[in-house]
Image (cartoon, rainbow, N blue to C red; front, side, top):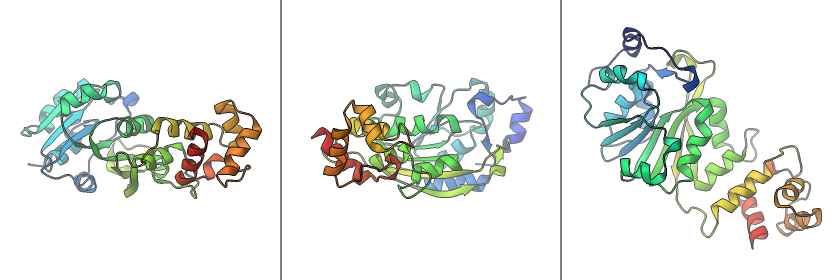
Length: 277
């Protein structure tokens, strides 16, 4: 397929950017191909893309994948996509909000194991990543381009200043790594921040015998007040007294003065078993 000049197509169609949707389109062909490479997309893969945009990443995915289901909210992009995706018969653009679709609704569209690839705006990163990690869908991997600051949180461990509840949530469901940093000048229009590509390899039932909802609740409670000691968060979150909260931590070999952001997933699993045993 011939390359396209997305800027020219947008200008020719008098397209007006929707700031509320955080629209910044990728213009660099080498970067587009690199993202597809990072996602390890091949001709046996079905890919769910979140945010079709001007179709530039969609094109790059479609050149490698068996099938692409690309979800988009902005129907004003239809004339742009008619040009940018012309000739790609393995692409289906779906004008629906993935965050509002039930698992069975999404599964009826996609119908099989799939990989997620997306260039996500900041405001939707966490809910979108968690939507797929916490689902019962057959997701093999999630490769997303996000704000660099958010990327650091997705891959952080408990020794990092970027460590957060989302870091633990990702670790519960798989393993994450930053595959490349991306300069802001690679986008049109140019955003105010740099980005990074994060790949999450999903591993269903990674934690055998663990109730994921209860473990997630424990982590949310532990990070609810970051500057508070974990004992205070446990007291507030579970409605227990200080003696019981201290007893739980001591039984796990954890200091009663520790803060939630200092503990690893392994240590949270100890607390989980102690509380829910």
